[in-house]
Amino acid sequence: MGTFLFDSIKPYILSEVNTNVRGDVNKHIRSLPQRFPNSISPLDMALAEGRRHVREMGYDPYHLPDYNYTVGIFRVDLTHSWVLGISSFYRVGNVSVRMEKNIAYAGVHVGTQRLEGRTMWEVQVGGLLSQAGSASFTVEHIHVKTEISQPLDTRKRPALTDLDIEVGNIQVRMDGAGTLDYVIELVVNVLPNLLRYQIVNAVEGPIKLRVQEIMDSTDIEELIEQKLPELDTIKL
Image (cartoon, rainbow, N blue to C red; front, top):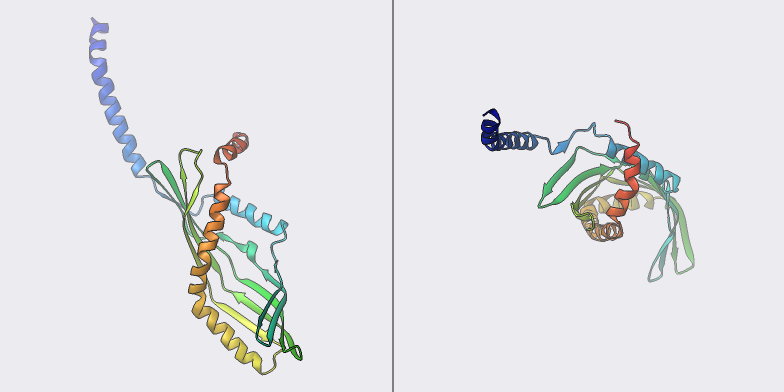
């Protein structure tokens, strides 16, 4: 009799348990934060590894190629140019993660500290007159906000869905042009700051295309298979 009664009411009990447990689990999942606090360590560790890699590759200071520009009888040469501080990037704010239609979206905000640089310049007029000097410059900061999407089907490639670049205040100091140093500094300091939003908007497109090219060449399945043995060795 006991077995008969249990088998009779078992479907009802399991149905109630399934409904209640699923409801409670869903309620708690919805209450989980979608933005992770500053204490998240994997991304910070990845950024630290990225900073080390940039320095080891010799990109900080980063030496720019020589540049020359000619208009009419005037020729301007920029040589021995370098930028210091590229490896000072760090995470700004929280990391956001969301899921929509089987696609995971991750938003990251990364910024650099102050960048400093220097270049040697020379101006020639008709090959007869020449004036040379140096210029130093600082960029208060560069902030990059990105959002990357990755389908749960790892056979598909990730995509850069959003890219926003912010350039801080730019300052230039000239040396070698005599009294014209002050005039050149005024023009050079004012124009980049007035036009930096237009400049940033112009470079965002090519940068986004280049980043997407890198993502298109990334095999997520292969990357997961390579990293799984490393995850197995991590002790929680």
